[in-house]
Length: 368
Image (cartoon, rainbow, N blue to C red; front, side):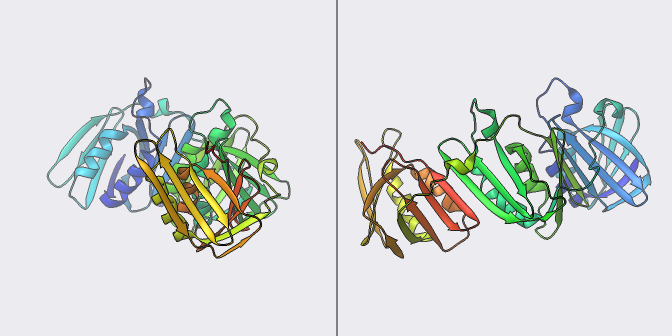
């Protein structure tokens, strides 16, 4: 294989694909990126995998003198290309090594047999749905923060994607809060489908499909999910198990409703959280027709009180405690100027809404 690459394009591709490559593993091939050069049309394809997630990215900013394949350690290849100041980089490979040449440099890096890498999953068959990358990015960003980091209930370590007709719901929970975002897609079939996708795969997806206008095709096959555009493909194993029946978790009886400006609530919660600690990490929120009062108290630190106007309020007065981090996590991802809080009682979950596209359920904390 012999190619001349646009260095900037190659750096961008390596940074993306390297995100899935394992830095420490007893299997050397899993520390590598597979390069495939085709001359019709001139294309360089980069593939990285950790055996659970596989990322494929193609770049056409390349000249192909000789088509071929190579398996090169991702860290060394990335370091060499990133440190170069040359606008183009030449890569020549044989069965044992790769030579990376710049204007004033030459590096020889030992590689591995391409056959050791194994087969690369392909997007075969029709798509379950298609969606603009920007819309998919929004749905994932508004939910992925609520996934469980470590939990014996393995299913909630992932994010649920649920398609019904041309509607797509994305759901995440850690048992203390639940985030639900809804959007539209172009359905490839009538039968509803769902899949639980690992958070690692979705974090990589956010970097891989960064053009909001490009169309992402999605397909579920056996125990894998495929996301693809014309330039890139991400394949991930699915999370095993059953996702909790999230519709049953969403309260329907909140008879106390408050509307508040998003930026005002963010400011108030942040300030109230300044005087909390691990022992008293709850912030008390008192709602009534006169407004919202937030109070917090930490032994040996002090106490805080912040008053905030409400755009509207209906129902009886109520006091409830929330973990401020959980509230702020949701407010960071909403894109509306105002949010609605629906409450039932001080010991019942609260619901934060922006419109019919985003809903967030959060458990209260004890204020005793």
